[in-house]
Structures are given as structure tokens and as C-alpha cells.
Length: 497
Image (tube, helix red, strand yellow):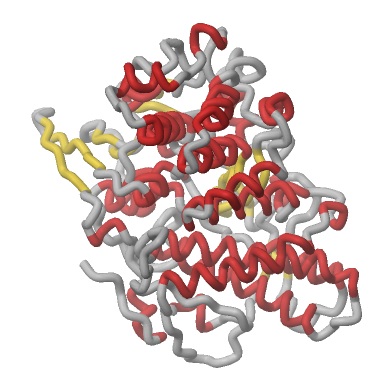
């Protein structure tokens, strides 16, 4: 499984020093020989979260991207070539150095798993040290999260009530000691069972008090429960979605305070201020943050991505409330639009050198997604009043000058707007549309597309501006991203094409 699985005992780990973004990408020496205390375990676990992002390829593969037409005033960089490949649902395999590519995410996610496994190996060898248990919980949760993201992206989506016997991804539980190990993909069902095992063992061990700083960069009780809710939504266990969501969103008033304040605090922000605020760990909505080597912060200038048509249709056009979304992307140069959600940061490899790596901070889990996941679970269980309650709490922070009488959602309003008479289907359609608008540029739309078998349509413009449409239907094998080619050397079979 490429370099990642060959060097499973990490050659280096990333260390977070305090809460400043400036030090998130500092590199420490190999901790294999240094792992001798809970402090070193805590440091190692910083590397148990993928240092890569999936936004680039999931967003551009989704229906939140469009063709904005050719540009002649710049030369595309290699990363943009991967973004273009995602738009046309083509495999892009160009090694681990290309940030934002499917290969990069695969490789760095398995490196994160390696860190978790190394920590777990040390902890398991010291069973009498009970102060290590919170770190065991974090390592198990991080390993579960990493494998969940891999199986969601590189295998067929889990279908509740079905066999799920298609190839999964290798679920790795040991630090690698062989030079050329062989791996098996197992089945999607088997991978899910192992994820759930880690989740159910790890979550009760989470202790918020072990990290005095940078708590949003580690699994906490809130983020662990948010991940559990996402996992069980995919699995179709709606009772569990509701149970874990309820441990974070205690009541309507408290839940509202944990959502992004689009129609209040954020409303007067100019683009620069929004970019700064959106990915701050101090934001109540951000439950788990991660950093990633990426130029996604400048995605607004690319040909394929968020543009005028998507903005006008999804965010500026009519919506089910009859009101206006407070969040609006900013035109860069027509028809190029900036979501204003991500600031590009820079880590100098040597201070003053001008050389280094661009990176972004990524909200991996948010209370905004969580409340909508719970709304979908309620709808799926025919608990329509509770689903509407969560939807309206969500909208109360999204619609400018929100008024519950005017903008509140009812089953009658859904039926009239969509022409859908079945209340469950109408609620789920509403939830998916609201999530699509909310998470523009964040890559989450893709996961709803694969869960609900939605067809994706992309426009393609020729040199004269004439548009044709290409489609990615529910049964298209390209909906499963390809494994890196070197994975075949580790005994893995590539996804069909």
C-alpha cells in the first residue's frame, strides 16, 4: 500500500505546540525510541489525524462545482490538475506530493493510523498505568475515524440492511515492522464492524481534561459523539444517531448557541474577517479541527469549482424558507466566487527562507452537521415534529431577519415547495438541500450524494461558451475513488473502472 504502508513505524511525527497555527506543521524527530511517557504518547497522537484534506476531490466531484470557462492569464499548477480530474471523475494518480489528491489523502490517512497504532502498542504494554487510558480512548477514536473516512471514499458506500460484501479497505491495527507487508481489503461490512469496535471501546475513555490547550485538535466528548452520530447515520442505526447527538446538543437553546452565527456575529464580516473566524477553534460550531497541506484556500480562481451559477442557484436563489441566507460567497472576478471559508496559511521550513508549505485548517466535525444528521435520523424514524424542530433551530441562525412564523418549516410548506407528499421523503429532501448550501466548499455534499444515490450533473463549456452536461449516476463505478497504483504491490486489488 505504497510508501505509507511500507514505513508504518513513522519516520517523523508532527507536533502541535500550543494553540498557535504557526507551529502546527513543525516536525519532531522519530518518536519510536522516545515513546516512554504519557507526555510522549500525547505528542504522538497529534499525528493520529490525517495531515491531508479530502475537500479538493469530494467537492469538485459533487454537484457543488461548475465549469466557469477557460482562463488564459495563468498556468495551472499540479494541484489544480487533480481538481480538474475530480470534476470529470477521472482517476488522478501522481504520487504523494500532490496535495488535495486522492493518493495524498490515502497515504497520509494511513500514516495517521500508524501513529494511533504506535500509541496503542505502548499503552497496551503498560496496563497498570491508568493515566494512559484517556490517550487510549483518543487513539481508538482516531483510528476509527481514519478508517471510516477511507472506507467511505475508497470503497462502495455502506447500505443499511444489505450484505455490504464488496471490497473495503485494509483495517490496520499494528505498527508495521515488515519491509514489504501484504494486506487484504476485507469487506465493507467487516471494516464497519472494526470501526464500531474501536468507537465503542474508545469513546467511554475520552477525558476532556487531559489536554489543557488545543482541545479542538483532539477527540473530545463532543467531537467523539459527533463522529459516532455520523458513523451510525451511514450505518442506518438512527437510535444511535439520536443518542450520540443528544450528548452534545442538550436542548434547543444550547444547540442554537453551538451553531455558526451566520445571521448575527458573522453577518457584518467582510471576506477577510470571515476567513479568519471560520476555522478558529474558538468557534462553538467547530468540534474537531485538523490541519492539511493544501492550497484549497485559493480554490476560487480555478476553472472548475464554486462559481456564479451554483452561488445564484443554491445560496442567492429561492429557498424553502422564503427568506434569504445570510451566508453569501464573494465574487472574486466574475464568474469566479470565493467561499471565504478558508485562509491559506504558510509554514516556513526555515525561518526567513521564504520556502515552505501552504496549509489550511479544516473543520472535521461540526455541530452544524450534527444537528442535521439528527434531523435526518428523526425523519427516518417518522418522528417528524422532532426533525422539524432541529431544522428550524438550524435555520434560525441562517436566515437574515429570521422570523419563525414567516420562515419556519412545516410539513405543509415542504409539500408545497417540493411537490412531495410523503413527509419522510420531503423532510430528507429538505435536509439534504440545506446541508448542500451550508457546506459549500467543505466537501461534505459528496457523502450525502453517495448515501442517497444522487445523480451528479456537471456542465462542460467549450471555447465558444456552449454548454453540455455530463452525468455520474448512482451505479457508476467512478463514485468510488481509486486506490493508489502502488497499493497493488501490497496485494490489494484496485477498484473497477
